[in-house]
Length: 557
View 1 (cartoon, helix red, strand yellow):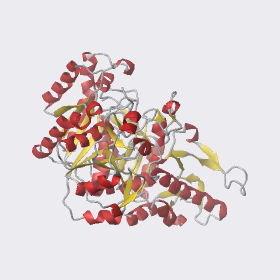
View 2 (view 1 turned 180 degrees about the vertical axis):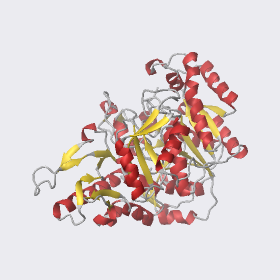
View 3 (view 1 turned 135 degrees about the vertical axis):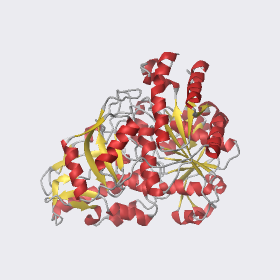
């Protein structure tokens, strides 16, 4: 069987001008980035402001295995499936981060016949948006360090610099470092610091949440970057470099236009992680896609407890977006893993483990129903799945009164997504939609965290460490306690323990500390042992990659 990169390199796709024409964009409306990629300027998009809004479909998933369950494959396949049914459709996805590309999961551009094109460019440097965010982030860091070293008129306490460095790579050795060595003239003022992956930067979240360049600058200005010796907040605007940061981001705020292997248009824009940040593509891309197509399929990172909850409670709350349907991607191998089967044996028929694993599926269905949105379960079929196992899952969904369809988009593209697409269309047309957010943002921060922990995660209790208790008081004292919360926790479990599978109930969520992302407009609660910059696995995907003299790429997946 051909690899994803082989399928992509053999594909015959449309020049990007022809893809743009499908959504009403002329050649002069797009900024070409090669033959198959383009950026769309914001002034061009504003022409669509008065158009009617299409239907919004958000794709999420059950708790994944380490290898992923095909959520992006299903998202792209659903776009292709709707297209093959003759519907006007667009996709909206996040840009992959280089860390996971070279780590364990590989790229995030789909697979098989359900891919976006050109996957190798999208998975790697793409149009440079992530690098622009990294440059803006590190410019601000350099300005902070320079200010302290030069005169420190802002009275910044070097031990209370909140703004770390950023790098788009998995480097665990940079999580905690000491900077400023070599004396004041050479290195500045010595103090502890560290790196986060660029997708976890607040600027990454801001880029995805901004609605204009002016909004971007206002949000950048509002970022809290340090504390003074008398513990007062220092804002990015105080360093005087917001204009320069916006200059670095002037192209990054423009959505990127690409296509599926079957020629449907897709915006790929924004890249915040869902286990650390809010995990959804840009508001700009989604808003304008909804004015360019009758159906728009977007993807929320990881499972319902992470990307989907944050899409509903952060993105929809702040933007006015309203989902018309949620697609829940499930795989039989993941369900067997949640039923107690070791992952390396999940390709063997095991109805007992499969049935036990239904607890995880049921919890994620319940999570979506918490928000009042119609649900369709997509069973993403893998080659080792038996007919009996597939029937077992579909029958279980039917007993729950939940729509479900088998998806074979990896092998068949749009044709394999038609059943799913039809169920989605019927759900939008016929099922009751009573969408609402989970909590009132005016509640105390503790109450908002507990609402998510109890209702979405299934936690019995919430424990706040001493640092988190102190952070709660500081947030309230600064008057920033009315933001929604963005919980950073493991993606491998509904709980904050990556080893706890299924649907844990008798457990306690542990909140280590709380950080203000005032520019993004949310409070980050760091839970369990989640790290802000991942490490590489024992056998990184990078070990299998190469490029030949003729340009052929090997191992990118």
